[in-house]
Structure formats: structure tokens, C-alpha cells
Image (cartoon, rainbow, N blue to C red; front, side, top):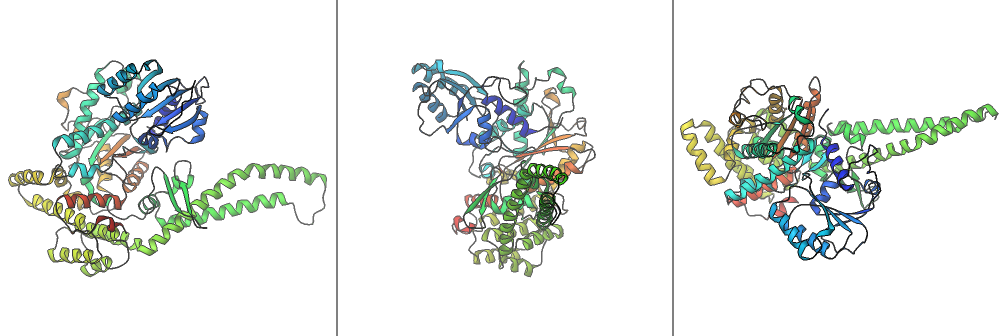
Length: 622
């Protein structure tokens, strides 16, 4: 059975809402208990894409509140808490219990609660004589947000900045790695799989892979662990492969403009937790949900924008034809003699028409929604010349450069400040060698448009280090790496591994190409140096790229540290569909970023390193 993360996480949440009782096949607990749900902001984001208000009602939840809101007592009713295990939430739970706000407290923590906090909870409720109100405490291992069947995010803000901050100490880096590992562990526990882990050497990817391997090993030692549900024969099934990368592996994808529908909607309109708001036809804002309940979004998300416009038109014409057909059938024929036989026929048609109305209405709503979204997108594309940005960035990546006049005309033409900055960074990434006078002209053009050039300078600095590293021989190369790591924080060694990826020239992303090779499991020079961790194998064999561990793999989980996007997600789904037989790929990341959000993180890093102009960053967004 294919791994379906959305379904698995939803099942865990429904079980939690039913006081962690077994749920019957209809999806509800055996006894109807009315209850109250209390969550924090983070857990609200976990629930939001999976559970709607009507679903809460179905599971007996009559009221729901944020934990930090003032709440009145509701007697004789159990409360289900779903919160992160942190100090302020524990204090609040103790306060709620001591005030006897609810009859009983069913506490569910989004990840494993650390022992000191558990002791705080115990002593706090003991001191206030309310420990009897705490019915159960559960670690749920659900600290990740599932947006689609095969897409999740850990919702960790600014991981890229934190991991690459030149002033970050070892302790801070270890803490970030620990939170990433904890989130990934939750994903694997929810899927109940222990994968084979692969990653490039060096940088955050190796740190996460080795820490996750250790965490899984430690956990598998206990008798009733989270992965033992299928008994001992689980390990004989084919296991998935978990491929871990870090954003510097392929920087360009986080920055470039894309013309496919899903990435475009996310990048331009700011899709967040499967929701977005756009200006409506009659003024005001309209909010839409774009998720698995929307068939148009699911089937056309990976199409180029012009193809989507054609598809909307096709669906609209098909809808009109179906409406005309219903009208023709129920309207009778003009001028015909009325007799009893026609009445029977007409009644039948009327019944069919009545039955088809809800489906037709729903189709019309979907068409209207996407017509509105596409209209707003089209306005932005025209105003900012986004189609030309997409084409020229692709050409640059393929040709490894761009004509100087063309480059400067784009920077002086249409587009927001961030569009121009993204284009300038793509120029730096795609050029095999940087022409100093050309780079100077680009900077001057950016400054003329009042753009903060910190991000541009930052990528240029990394690029120049890369080029010197690539050309240096291995002996001196080590010295440069040591020097670079002292100077620029953790990830330069990962950046050096990404030199050829920065210059990847074909349309298929380096990430997709690499995942395809890892799933095949055949010897391949691109991935032969990748590390292998198998948490179920003896410790001595880990870290070496041995027998490629019984590939090919049918299922993969691909995880990007430092920010992912819908471009990579779409590319990996295309890869999975293209395979014969069809493979299955889940894509996850520390956070899903638009091009603008990622460039803002590069800007912060540039400023921390004292690069670039000092135009206020806030102005860069306009």
C-alpha cells in the first residue's frame, strides 16, 4: 500500500479527538462524548489543512479555543488539549486544571514531552490539588503540517538563516538539527516506516541524517516501539528510501520564477496552509481553499499557466453544454400536444435534473474560483512581465549566461524590486565565470531601482568561493574549506558539493535527477559518494555506501532542509508518475518558501556578513 501521509495523520488526529479510543469503521468513536478542543497556534496550523469545523462536530467537539485565550469554565465536559510541549503551555494547563475549568483533561503533545516539563506538570497539578483531573497524557509525534497526500512542512521559520548565520554557535546549530530530526521522526512514526537514509556528505544534510539514524536506533531498542505495529515481518517488506538534502544543494530553485500553475499561485498570491485571498470581481477580498477537495487544482496544478487558462475555458463550455442538456430535457418540446406519456417521461427527466443540480453547482463554483484566481494572476503577469522573467532565467540556466544588454534591459524594465533581485541572483548562479565589470553594472542597476543588494552580494561571495574551491587542488582545497567554514558558518562545505548543481543546465532539476538515481539504487558516479544509514542494520555498516541496499525503491521520502517550494514538489511528482510502474514520492521541507521569502533570508545573511547596500529591507518588497 502506498504511503499516504495525509490520511495517516488525519487518522491519528481523529483518534485523538475521540479521547484516543479505537475508532469504528464509520470514523467515529463508539460512544458519543461531547468535548472541548484546546490548541495552540502551531497545532491549529497542523489541524487546519486536515480537519474542518463540520468534521469536529462529527467527532463530538462542540467548542474549540486557542490555549492563550481567556476561557470560562464548562463543567461535566472533558477537554482535549493538543499543544506543543513548551513551558508556557504547561503553565497554562496547570492553571486551567487548578481552576477546574473542565471535568477531565486529555493532554496530547505534538511531540514527545521532555522529562523536566512532565515533572513541572506533575508538581503543578499536585500543588493545586488538581492532578485527578488529568486523565491521560499522550505524545502524538504529529509536529508537522501535511498539505497534500505527498507534501509536508515542519513549519520551522528561517532555518536557512539559522544554519548559515556566521555568528551561530555549535549549540544553536545542534538545537536546530534536533528540532528537524524530531519533526522527521514524527513523520516516520506516523507512517510507521523505518527507511534507508541517504544524503550527500557534509553540511546540515549529514548532520540530520546521522542524528535521525541514532534516534531511530535508540527507539527501536525498546520492545513496544512506534514501528512494531506490523510485528517482526515489517522489515521484510520493501522499505522506503529517505533522501535528505540541504537548500544549498540547488540554490536556484528557491529563487527562480516559474510558470506552472501551482508554483505561480504560491509565489504570486501567497498560498498558505492551502488557503489564499484574492480581490473579488465586485471589490473586497475572496478567500479560497485549494486542496484535495478541488479536482481542478489536483489535476491541473502542474500545467503551465496558458494551458490552465485553456482548461478553464474547456470546463466552462462543458458545464454550459451540460446545463443546456438538462434544460432541453426538462423543458419539454415547444408547441407539442400534452399527453400522459410525456408526463411520465418528463417526471423522470425532472428527477434526473434535480439530482444533477448539486454536482453542476459545485462544478460552477470550482470554475468561478479558478477563473477569478487566473484573472488576478494574469494581471500580475502582465504588470510585472513575469513570462519574460521565466523565459530569460531558463535561457540563462541552459546557456550558462546572458547577453549584457539583455541583462541590463530586464533590470531596468518591468517587475518589482524583488523580481529584479531574483533575476540578478539567477544571473550570478547561472554564469560559469563572473565578469567583474558586468557584475558591477548589475549592482549599479539594482541600486538605481533602490534594491537592497545584500542577497546578491551574498550569493556572489559564495559563488566566488565555489569557483576557487572547484579549481583548487585537493590539498589547498581543504585549507580553503576550513577558512570558509570559520568565516561563513556551517554550510560552505555543502555549498562546494553543490557547484555542479548550481550550474545544472538541463530542465530536470538536479534534485529530481539525484532522487531518481537514489531510487534506482544502481552504481552511479553522481551518487556514489552519498552516505547510507540503515537504522535496522548493525551500527558498523552505517555511513558507507555499500551494496546500494537492495534498490530499486518503490517509495521515497525527499526532505529539503532550509526551505522547499512547489517547483520541487511538482518536479518530484512528475518523476513518480513517469516511472513504470508508477513510483511514490513524498516531499517535505523545513518550511515552504516563495521566491521572495527565500531571497529575504539571503538578504539577512548578506547583512549579517556586512555585505550590500543599506537600503531598508522593507522597501525591497514593494
